[in-house]
Length: 90
Image (cartoon, rainbow, N blue to C red; front, side):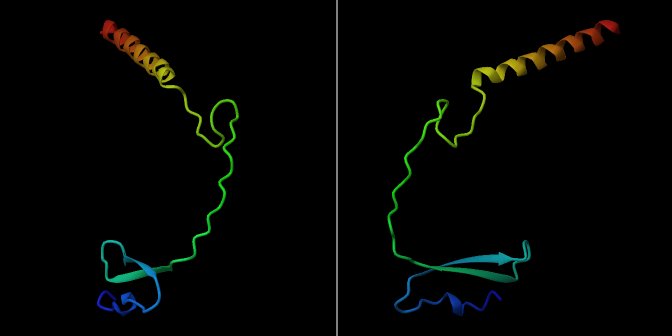
């Protein structure tokens, strides 16, 4: 319960980090505690970046911005043509 905060007290000789969350959503009558302790840092070598010819490996492939306009302009032109035909028919 919210008034039970004894688990959040500092512990001599320990290096803890505690995340406090509220539950249930919107009511917030209880708390969930997630606790972690510091570990020894061991540096690792990073793998070398590999190129696949089109960009870095693992990169998302997207259409270039100038190609986005082609389908957008096509939709606008088709919509305008349909609108004009309906307007002439009245």
